[in-house]
Amino acid sequence: MRVYNTLTKNKEEFQPLIPGKVSMYVCGPTVYNLIHIGNARPMIVFDTVRRYMEHKGYEVNYVSNFTDVDDKIIKKAIEEGVSAEEISQRYITECKKDMADMNVKPATTHPLATQEIDGMIDMISALIEKGYAYPAEDGTVYFRTRKFKEYGKLSHKNLDDLQGGNRSLLVSGEEQKEDPLDFVLWKPKKEGEPSWPSPWCDGRPGWHIECSVMSKKYLGEEIDIHAGGEDLIFPHHENEIAQSECCNDKTFARYWLHNAFLNIDNRKMSKSLGNFFTVREISEKYDLQVLRFFMLSAHYRSPLNFSAELMEASKNGLDRIVNAVENLKFLEGNASGDAMTAEEVAKAAQLSEFEKKFDEAMDDDFNTADAITAIFELVKYANTNVDGTSTKAFVDAVKDKIIALSDILGLIVEKAEEILDADIEKLIEERQAARKERNFARADEIRDILLAKGIILKDTREGVKWERA
Image (cartoon, rainbow, N blue to C red; front, side):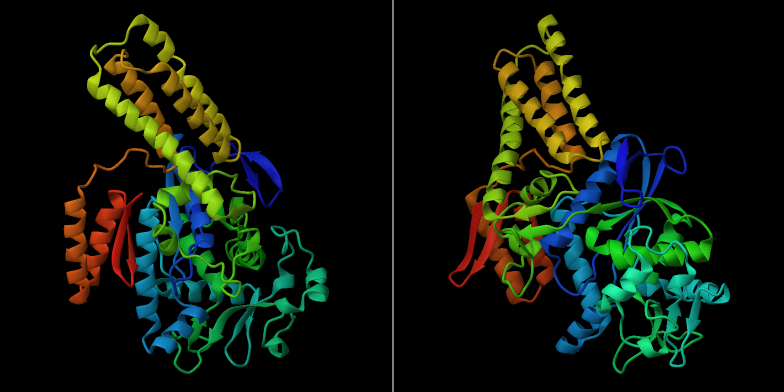
């Protein structure tokens, strides 16, 4: 298996630190709102990497954090007149719901930054003791960027170029820094903000130190894979490397994987352009399996353009696989003989060729686009070679292969049992009653039950409308 390592800018043979085991850290979202489709891309991509690793027989320790203390969370809390914890807990719950709807497996551990403050204070103290960090008069603690000689090795940036060419990197408080490029490890509290006691001041950690500490606690000082969106390469991942390697005197991560940006109709997604979509909004129009299929239809390192046309194409592509499986299920139910004929045994031997093509694509830096092509070829094979005269064993073998390869990509290609219109209406009535009683947990549960059965709800002024996905 070869993976593209951002650190070396090369595809490298994957060799884990411990044979048979993979330690993997993926930067998770800052939880101040519903996740958007830009957040969804790394979630889906690296969930698929994990699934493929497990398919290959690796035991994967997959850690993905929630950043639950941040300026945006605090701003939202002040706007709503509630605590930052209430905001973060609300949106962690919503994020987990969206992840489940996208068939993203829960991480081995989902650590919260606020529960790891002691570890952050310990790491900052160690960095000060080693001379890599220093406290300013107001209690802010900074990292001495130039003291880490390899700074810039991930982003391939030169420190002098950074200082001369990008003033936006020089954050406030420059006058008390030893060097304008030093970055914050700990910051003093402001009025109304959550804070924790520390040897330097009551305050809270900088963003970068959070991931260094959570990765170390749950995976160890040196890990196999660190992953995230390419927007995190600099400064976040660069700073993580600096902190972790200076503190632990070890290589932080051996392989750095980054997914490319997602654009909307060939433009960068932003609220100001009005092209900002949450995963929840997409779920009102499509089963989120379509979104997953769309995300995997391009290589993860290629920029991906989101549009209505491409989503429709993805829906059609997924339907093609789902319909093939449904057809095979029908044939299976009507098949006569149990054991394969000699001719079918020869045909069934070809199934391994499709799996080989699939594995070759995924072994080449997780090329999900080519892996999907291998599944399409298998579907074509099924449509050509399986019919009403086929034995149950042969139908089963073909059907199970399509389902198994799709499952590695996290694609659910077996239709949920059909639900009757009357039962749908009954559940919608129950959901409306639950909402009136402010039992939102039950209302959400009913929506999920219907979504799992392929029923998409849309709340309109005229009432609740529904359609089959």
